[in-house]
Amino acid sequence: MLSKQLKWILLIVLALIWGSSFILIKKGLVGLNPFQLGSLRIIFCAVFLLIIGFKSVTKIPKHQWKYIAITALFGTFLPVYLFSIAQTQISSSVSSILNSLTPLNTLLVSMLFFGLRFKRIQFFGVIIGLIGTSVLILNGNSYVENHNNYYAFLVIIASLCYAINVNLIKKYLSNLTPLSITTGNFSIMLIPALVILLCADFTEVIYHQETQHAMLFIMVLAVVGTGIANILFFKLVQMSSPVFAASVTYLIPVVAFFWGMLDNEMLTPIQFLGAFVILIGVYLANKK
Figure 1 (tube, one colour):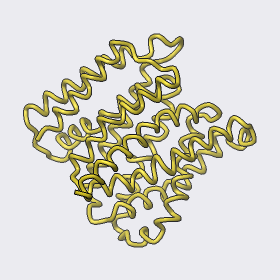
Figure 2 (tube, rainbow, N blue to C red; figure 1 turned 90 degrees about the vertical axis):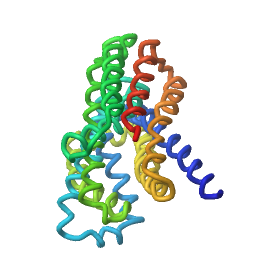
Figure 3 (cartoon, one colour; figure 1 turned 60 degrees about the vertical axis):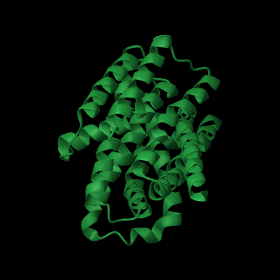
């Protein structure tokens, strides 16, 4: 009974953490450009993980480090910059909804490149999800002047990166602990992130009060939203099932939407329809 209650607690906590990530990105962009934000997110999280998980890195066999590097690229490095760039033009609410395409894209990647067989209802789920995505993008932030709705495609690309990452980990790194994989990923990304941060003129703005304020949001995003959340998610998978753990996907947009409302964001009726259609598609695509 205690275990059953704990898994629901973890699910809700993860939804609150990850659902809050999009508004933290939005706040971080007030004082930081997308490349500074993405780099700081990686750096802060890398330092945190190396402190708590340095010993786990030594357990990674040499021949698997190439897969650690590849999963670092697709699982974190590209997405953190893609999300940051996208949210300069689209709302945090829309970004979170499009992020819910990750399970659907995971299924697509599995079918196309990893030989996964699928049922007819899953195929219909993919089609429905794509329809909902089209509705959401074409009716994105039309009420906000000078916003480019097509930046939403960057979030879709990021969700594809996540999908590739999940399949690669399952195929090539399933023998490693989650802490080893995550810490290994961020240890590889630390130096490139530092280089990008310096090339993004961070030293010119670091003493600005607005920049320092934004850095606090990104520190919370990195340590809590990336480091601690990943550990909680892996724990949830271990004590329940991947299917139950993946259901957090449906709760994240709800949390992000309410944060967006508090920050004066509002979805149009058409956007609500697109979001609803996407979630139906994701649900059907994950039917067994």
